[in-house]
Image (cartoon, rainbow, N blue to C red):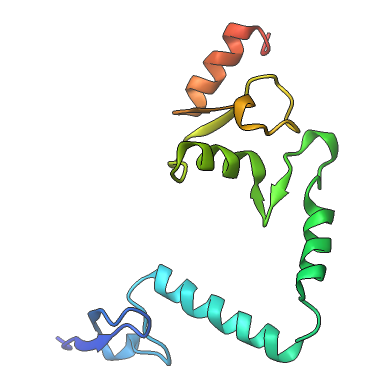
Amino acid sequence: MVPKIKVKCEICGKEIQRYQCEILKHIFCSRDCSKIYTSTRMKNINANLNPSRMREETKNKIRATHILYSGKKGYPKTNHKHTHRLIAAEKLGRKLKIGEIVHHKDGDKQNYSPDNLEVLKSQKEHANLHFKDGRFR
């Protein structure tokens, strides 16, 4: 049997074991560390190859074109995240948990006032709320 070799993750420094054939140019202990490396690498490539393209003004224009990409049916976005979810998380003082749903009390997807948003534990709870209101009938 071929023994494993001890190596360190490039990002976090965690010691891991890999077979010789698994040791590539870059070594990461997890997908999260790999994503950090890739994100940093791409940010540097973009900065070097296209330094004047992605100024704050350009980013804001791109964001504006994507805010309501699906017309009146869509949810407004901020930095590629649904604005109502960001506001609900801010209102709670924590990130939303996986599976939590943000409900618009008045039914208007464009109204993301904190008073209009309610965080529900699951999609099932959200559906039950709509059935009770008669909106799914």
